[in-house]
Image (cartoon, one colour):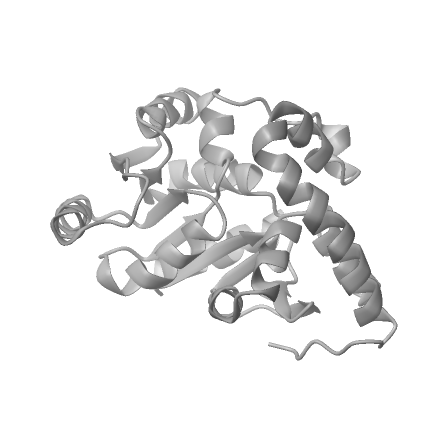
Length: 254
């Protein structure tokens, strides 16, 4: 387990892309089971009203700093080498590493056809990438028959890493529940990375990502879906984090 920074009671791992990749490679090599949460303001704010979800984040093998506010929180706490470990970038770095390591991948999530399209796009970029299966779940909890089908598919495919492309907190709850049920070493929840790398949704320019403005780009792209999330979460996060920094309110460390 890496060091963590307490952000409103959620332990955000002190990482950058390089150290995250080393941790993932070590876990795959040792076949050490775990799930990885790629966490920004949205995840931290969801955890404020959901103690079970907060426990899921704090129980993760890694809880990466997906958003720039998580990185800034780390730097305020003296972690100068902490950098953004953004889900789509992490996926590309892990896929590049897998061409030489031989790690096998399985894609779970996305709308109909997205996981298959994602596979095509990634294999075009990484010709030696081993993708051993995909599964597009329904927009509801899996029933008993579907769970058995998924378990059989995973058991036959023997992936090292199962990528989960659902939304937060759905993907994190899925990983925490299904890690013990599936024959896989690591599960990594990367949300919108499925849509970005399949080409369905455009990513924000790099300068907006680096400056903490990606949320604004995504809001402009998907106002109906994201207006309520960002309109509530961003100001409330600033208020709560200020109260934590100044000691006005205590958030117990995970």
